[in-house]
Image 1 (tube, rainbow, N blue to C red):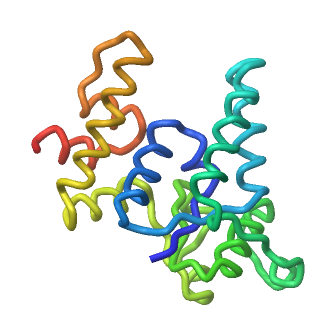
Image 2 (image 1 turned 45 degrees about the vertical axis):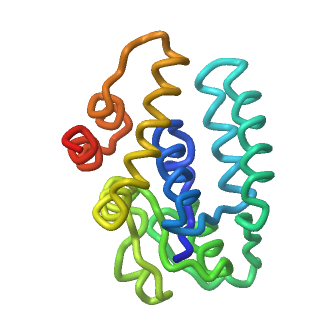
Length: 181
């Protein structure tokens, strides 16, 4: 299954790491466009002067690790599409050009299910998607969560538990499932 990742699910570190960890486990094939990655870099400016530089470094690593994930939507595809927010049309176009099965986003209102279904696409929230992967492959997703938790504890100097970390990352169902595993 190929899924296009919207900027809003790539920008937050823990959410991105959980999704890409699931992809590394073979749960899905990730897709994105250069514009989506650029939006991530620009959004990182909010974190301070080093935020954008760090994001650009992470983007370079992402491109290296997933060399076939980047798709380039043709202008003709974008011209025929409609979404409530015109600024999101490039995401839909990238999903179409990449032959994705769906779009992973937290912006539900900007990606109406009926509009996506006309293009043969589903809309997934990161939490429901990752929870579904956990139901199908619990050990794979638990190992991803354990790795991310260890990294968060090491980098923050704080002691996180998986439930608190994933709830903060807006993954409440997955947080509950992994905390009870």
